[in-house]
Image (cartoon, rainbow, N blue to C red; front, side, top):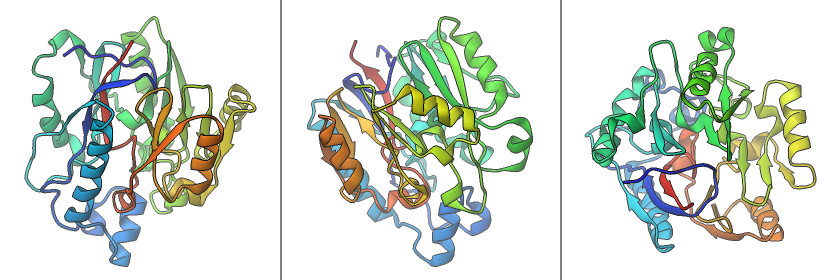
Length: 303
C-alpha cells in the first residue's frame, strides 16, 4: 500500500471507515470522555450498536460507489472503533500513529493489521510527552494545520487531546511543511462550547472554501486569520450547528463532498459553490461528538 495524503480533498483511493461491530454497551457517565456522550447517557438517548452499524454501512456503500477501496478495522470485542480518524493520520507518504488518551489506546490494534505492508519507516510514533489525535491534524498542501490546547488547558480538560508539544514534534517530522497551530475552545461539560478536535469546527474544501464555527477557536487572532484566508468563500455556523457536527464533512473527490441530510443551510451553500453533495444519515453516530471526517481515515488520495 502506498500511503498518500497531502490535503483534505484529492480523490480518495483507499480509506478506512470505522466499525460499530461489538462497540460494547452503553457506558456510564464516568466511563465517557466527551460532554456530548455524557449528555446522551444522562438523557437515555445514547446510540445503540445496531443503529450506528447501519449508518456506517450506508456511508461505506456510498464511498464504494465512487470506486474507492474501503477497509474496515479488525474487530476488537467490546471496544468502540467508530472514530477511525483519531487513531492515525496520513500526511504525505507516512502515517502518524496518534498517541490518544489511555481509554482509547487499544483502538490502534484494529487498524494496525490493515497496514502490515507499510514499512516501519513510514509509521511515525509520537514519543512520550507528545499527545496528538488525528481529528486535530489537517494536511493542507505543504502546511499542517493542528488543533491543540495550551499547557494549562491540556492539564485541565479531558477533551484536550493534542498538546503544544505535538506542534514541535510534527515540525521535526515534516521539516518541509509549515506547521500552523490553532488553539481550541474546550469544555468537559458543555458540548456546545467544546471543539473536541479541529475538524469539529473547521472543514476545508478544494475550491478554497470552508465551513467554520469561529468560537471553536479560542484565540481571536486565529479566528481573524481563518476569516481572512477564506474571505468571500466562508460559511460560518453557530454553536448549535457545530453541536450537530456540520463542520465535520469529507471530500471523496475535489468536486464530491459527503454531508448529512439535515444540514440544509450547509448543503445549499456547498451546492451554490459548485460541489456535488452526497448525503447519508449519521445522526446516531453524531451523538458521540464525531461525524464524517471522524469516522474515516484516508490512506491514499490520488496525486
